[in-house]
Length: 306
Length: 314
Ligand SMILES: Nc1nc2c(ncn2[C@@H]2O[C@H](COP(=O)(O)OP(=O)(O)OP(=O)(O)O)[C@@H](O)[C@H]2O)c(=O)[nH]1
Ligand SMILES: Nc1nc2c(ncn2[C@@H]2O[C@H](COP(=O)(O)OP(=O)(O)OP(=O)(O)O)[C@@H](O)[C@H]2O)c(=O)[nH]1
Ligand SMILES: [Mg+2]
Ligand SMILES: [Mg+2]
Image (cartoon, rainbow over all chains, first blue to last red; front, side):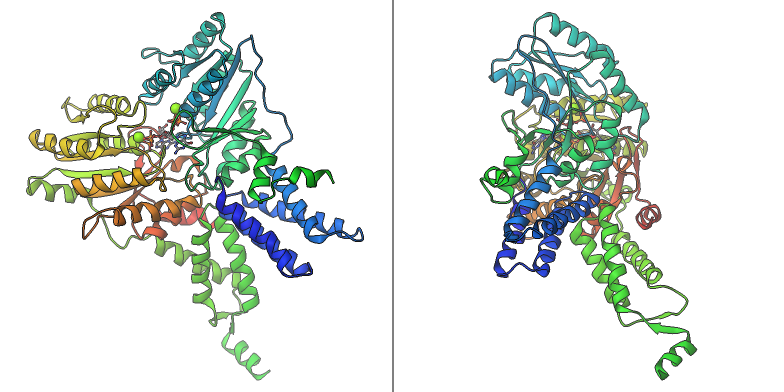
């Protein structure tokens, strides 16, 4: 399972509370320490971890004042809520509307998985009978258009791109206009990889944004990224209006915590996760269900309502 | 009390262990914030503690300063290669033996294998070598066209319009065979170097790791370069351990080939969060041979140890 290691350790930390019989301060401290270590080893931003530990402790202490509170349950609930808060910015993800064009632009660091994920998402909607298509606005990376073309052909998704035009803004504008005219509903624009240290690349992203005026911008992030995640995510958000995050490469061993920290930086919800190289290896993401699973608490929603 | 005065007289005192513990803990967090993998940060901190426990420090210097010095020593030690690899010299040796020198790039998905392979080709071509690129990624869409574009672009920089050539057999072919045939072709064309690109793969993906072990065993490259991005966090450790394990265990050879060196890519995207350089070298004991600092062919550097230490200490 995604983040399986983290889940096991978090569950262990919470179980540790129960074993010591009475839940005293020492047990709480041990739990918090283990919680912190587990998150840090999963690449969650270290500042966020410190904040999260403080908040959990505060909640436990506040709840403790109420007589008769079950401290272990209190701790579980606090951990669940804070982890969920980390993952869930409390914003509804963008919902495309049928019968009109929905332009979705993909942005992110080099090699994060944008092009692959573009096809996966287009395919996801195509299977649900949306008219979807792809526009390749990456004229920089060698072979970028061929990559998108071959992916699109495999998925039987119409695509637009050019071998000769070198300005991605021109291609993006033309492609989106054409597909709009043709009545497409999901128009996905793939862009080159870029990073905050290179201003010209960020400027280009802004120009692309202005040219196609997207209904949603998806920030694609590699699940193996470490402590630089927050920095980059925040910079993307500062330049364009990121509305959703997709975390890739969560198949295998990837811990994903660095990418999770991107949610805090962008205040945008995670909508999907990538779990493989193939077209169908995309999973919808729901923060609450995910954290519940992570902590081995299937029905946390029930607990929350009490 | 007498002891106290003695210490004053000599100007030193036994290091305060409580204070030491505190500073070491802060150091650990600091290293982690610089993107050193947490296990590696822990190893470094244990090293610092061991080197300082029970030692005497001058009354005028602080525990923090002593820890800082010890940290610097540790990092320099980790970053200083135990073995030097001189690719240009080794190519000359292969040339005398009438064999092309074979470099294989391996690593997980999207880290920059193909791009940095092209950068290495550029560097070698500038050193007068004629190069064959083997299109060993027969899986990912556009992988072959990506290399073809690089090959064409690279050649435009040189008088010899055929200085870099691409060997491919199309998609879905066995990469081990592609590499083998590319090496043969390079011999026929009297090329001095073969650069073998491989598909990205997750370290836990057994079938793909097995295929990589087969490619290595069949072709016995002179140099296996692990490509890792400077952005990677704690996964760096697992990636390197498992790539080496796969090359070791999934090979039927008595003396299997392991990773010889590291290409650290996307170094231009991390500011001062340089920790991955420490994690990767600490785990493998192998040197960082190239650092990728951008997307142009000339964006390839040697690791600047002093700069890494400075970024880390900041
Ligand atoms: N294992 C795995 N690999 C993935 C996943 N998503 C993408 N990849 C791989 O990651 C590599 C990079 O993916 P791309 O889609 O080319 O990334 P990109 O962001 O478009 O790259 P640039 O355009 O160069 O910035 C490819 O080898 C993909 O097959 C995933 O969820 N799991
Ligand atoms: N900023 C920066 N980008 C880099 C660097 N090296 C590679 N890239 C970019 O990273 C992206 C992925 O590079 P590739 O060479 O395709 O990566 P790969 O490992 O071959 O990917 P797969 O074959 O799909 O596994 C491309 O957009 C490259 O331009 C670097 O040193 N700095
Ligand atoms: Mg791309
Ligand atoms: Mg490649």
